[in-house]
Length: 218
Image 1 (tube, rainbow, N blue to C red):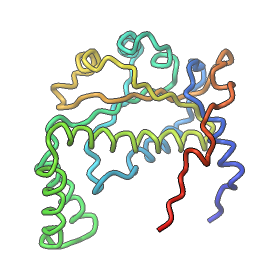
Image 2 (image 1 turned 90 degrees about the vertical axis):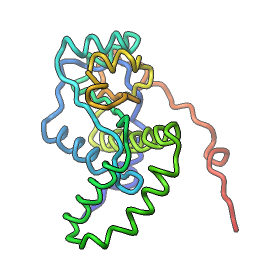
Image 3 (image 1 turned 90 degrees about the horizontal axis):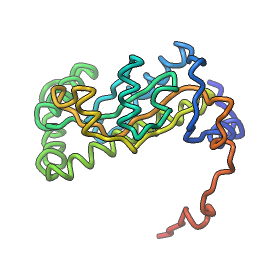
Image 4 (image 1 turned 180 degrees about the horizontal axis):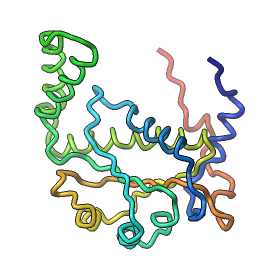
């Protein structure tokens, strides 16, 4: 299998920016959107548990209301696609067992083969974390999927903008999240930058690599 060159990958990532102005008239090819959703669906998570849900929000009126609940950020309405990452409110034993049953079925394992694994997951995640710690852990898993989405989009020349500045209470009401047992943690606009997008053209400001990446030798 041929791999993209390091140079092409680097250029794609350096082009990436948290786009503020999207072009509402430009639509993602369905093939690209399907690819990005596949990336999200197959993103890594701790123990493979995926303790979150991803909502693809459609509808002009609903997205306008979500824009207002996002402090007026136009990316919510102007981007072609809009995703909301939400953690499960009562993640626990039932979700672990459902995952292990999927694992047993997909990998054709006997029931006893997942027993020890179940004990470890229950001890470390369900029983080993406080509710606050568990929600923080869940949010970190959702952010891994968000990062994978942004990286994959950049490789396809597709723009994104993650949005943490959202009113989670308003999102809960607008998306009926309590009835779904979910709490929004972050959103992401996906589409193509507009001709008036200037933020993405500014040079990136990052600390020197040697200051960020510290080498530790044993």
